[in-house]
Image 1 (cartoon, rainbow, N blue to C red):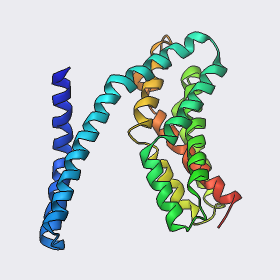
Image 2: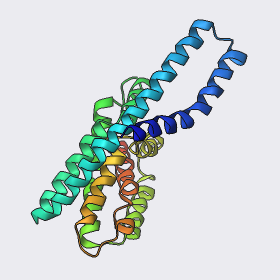
Image 3: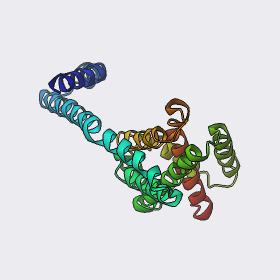
Amino acid sequence: MMHDYKHTFREVTQAILPILLVILLVQIFLLGSSTAAILQFLIGAVMMVFGIALFLIGVRVGLLPMGEAIGAELPKSGSILLILVVSFLFGVLTTVAEPDVRVLTTMIDTVSNGSIAQTPLVLVIAVGVGFFVATAMLRIIYRVPILYLFTAGYGAIILLSFFTSPEFLPIAFDAGGVTTGPITVPFILALGIGVTAVMGGRSALSEGFGLIGLASIGPILGVMLLGVVMPL
């Protein structure tokens, strides 16, 4: 276990160190930042490394095993409705807790002077993710080719792009991007792999993945529909 901790800290440090060095050089040679500002940046960088490493350890120790366990138990209930409801709820709740979604919606709320409020936007994004996570579970159960779902999803996106408010169009695609964050991705992937693992004759590679791609369609469609219903 201690080896895993050291390995995680080393991975995080190697990944973050290059961008930290670039920022530090920019601060020193281009911005001429004060010693106090540089010291504050270095303290924040150390805290960030420890924070990301501890989060990743938490994902590996708790979030992934729990997601797989829940995914493995759901099909045993024999109730498709229960699988859909639980999948929808987890999709919604993990998205609400996603830091990237909070950052995006806060910035949109600020830039739009409150005309696109944070709370409704978070709910629209979360419901979109939840709906498509439930759809992804149906795909696994009924072995629907993922190509059909992607074709239908992105076809709907292209169609809606002609009707949604222009201000909502870029927001919609950013909303689809921020849902693939450090909380949503591990849990949804683990949930899908868990469901696939207990269903006979299913390939974890071909059917347990693709959930994140489908889940990203939901926020795009949701925000676009919001732009149709409530144009600025």
